[in-house]
Length: 465
RNA sequence: GUCCCGUUCGUCUAGAGGCCUAGGACACCAGCCUUUCACGUUGGUAACACGGGUUCGAAUCCCGUACGGGACGCCA
Image (cartoon, rainbow, N blue to C red; front, top):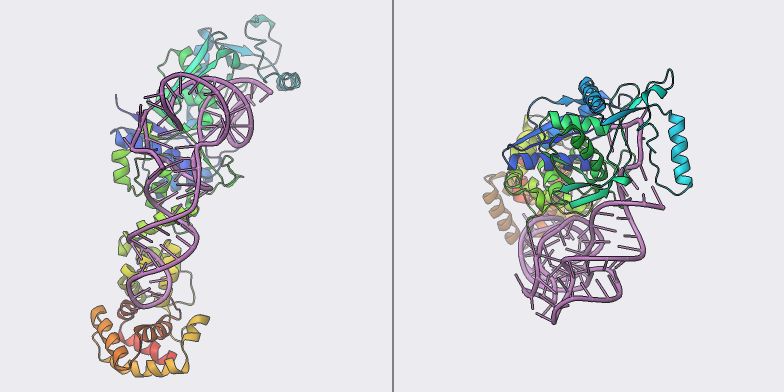
C-alpha cells in the first residue's frame, strides 16, 4: 500500500510554525516511505476563509520547500459530495434529521453546564417520527452515533486512546443549509483522496473519535492516525492567530534560511539519538512517526538562530550574495552596482562565518557598497587617533606596491608591523576603521582584498586626512 | 464542569528495568585560539513534578495526586 499523507490547513489565518511543522512531518513521512503528499485547503468556512490567506499558506509551503503532489484540493468544491454521503447515511439509518433551533440547543447547553453535566446534545430527534417535524424548519443531519461500548483510536504517536461512547453525542454532519460540518467533510475527503496516514496536531485527537464513528457508519476503513504535539508559545499556551503565532514568512523577513527553519522544526518533537544538524535529505532518510514524542514543545529563537548560522556557513556564496543584495536594495546610502556585488561575493566566504542571519550578513556587507566619505561608528572614529592616521599614511605606500591577494596582504601587514615595531593589532584595528567605518569586520587581509587596491587606498587617504 | 493527552537541566531532547555518578544541543559562565568580531576548542553551572506500589534493582512498569495542555459549536 502506497502511503499518502496530506496537509489540510484552513485559510482563515497565517501559516504559523505549528502548521508548518505539521506540513513538514507529513511531507517527510511521505517522502521517507516513497509515498505521496497532498494538499487540501479547508475553506468550507466561507465567512472567514480568504484568498489572501490561501496565498500566504501556499507561499509559506513553497518557501520551506515542501512541495506537494497532484492538484491542490479545495474543500469548498466538494460540498455536493459531502451532502451525498450525509444522505447515504440518512437512508442507511445511520443518521437522522434534527429540527432543533439554535436557541433550543443553546438552552440545552446552558442547562447542562448549570447542572454540572457535560454540554451534549440529548438526542431528542434521534428516534422521533419524521411526521412530527415542525413546518418550515429545515433540519440539520446528525450522525446516529453508537450509545454503548467505546470508540478506540490506535494512534501512532499517542498510543491506544479510547473513550466511552456515552461521552460522545450525535454530531451534526450536514447543517440545515445543506453545507457539511468540518468533521464530516474531513472524513469524506480523506477517504475519497485515499489518505492512508492522517498526521495532524493533537488538538484534533478528541475529534478523531467522532470521525472514526463516521468511517464506521459508512463502512470505510480508517486511515492510520498520528497526533503530533502542539508547539506552544512562550507562556505554554496553544499558538493561534491572536496568540504568539508568527507567520513562517516572517522568519524569512528576519533572515532565517528555510532549511534551518525546517531543521529546527523537525527537532521540535522528533529526535534521532543526539543528532541535531539534520539537512532535508538526511531527514527524509531518517524520519519516522514513531520517533515523534508526545509532549508539547516551546519555540526557542536562540537555538533556531544558532542552527541558522550553521546553515549560512555552508550555504552557497552566490545565493547568499543575492539575498544580501536584495535586502540592501532599499538603502539609499549605498552604491549597489556590479562593483559592490563583486566585492560582496569576494568577501562572502569570510562574511558568512560571522553571521547568524541574513539580516546580520547584509549589515556586515553594507560597508562594501559605500562611497567615501564613510560614516564612522563612534568606536571606529575613536580608533583613528592622530597617531593612527600617521601610521596609515605610512602604510599606504607599502600597500600600493603589494599584490592584493589575501596571502600577500597578510605578509605585507606583518612586515609593516614588525618594521615599525607595532603589534599587528595596532595596525589592523585603525586600518579596519578606515576601511569599514566599523571596528568589526572579517579578517583585515580579506577585507582589503575584497575592496581592491584603488578603493582601499581611497578609503585610507580619506580616513587619515 | 466532563472527557482526552502530557510532565527529564532555563529551552529542545537522549533514555524501551541494571550500560545513569542521567548523555547531547542551545543559552549562560570561565579558559584557550586570535588581527576586531565570529567560528572553533576545553572546562563548568544546571533536570528525572510529587507520593505510593511492583522488583534483588525504576527516569524507565502500575496506581494516585499536583501542575500544564487540548477537546467539548449548525468554527476549522
